[in-house]
View 1 (cartoon, rainbow, N blue to C red):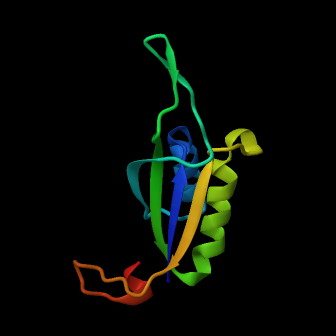
View 2 (tube, rainbow, N blue to C red; view 1 turned 180 degrees about the horizontal axis):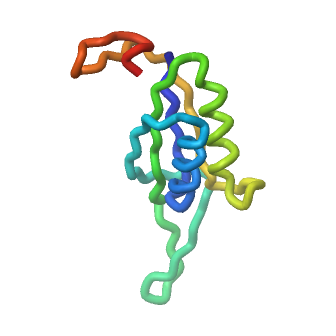
Length: 114
């Protein structure tokens, strides 16, 4: 089992979610987060240019069995790229091992609980 965490642009959320549903990956968790990386956005505030430290992003977390890791990652990669080619600020994907998953309602454990 793996936990896939993707940090993407806010405007790409609907496109990524629809692509995941098409790939039959329907159980996701979405959070609004802020962060910074290589992407820099200049804004005008009271006539002065400022560069905000933190940029709003979307964090998607998906717990999957090992057989679905490649499908999930490929789907996110294809759908989260800006203009299909990608640009700075499109985000990152992290894959972490998932030791245990327990469904609270039934007490199921492991891959069947996902």
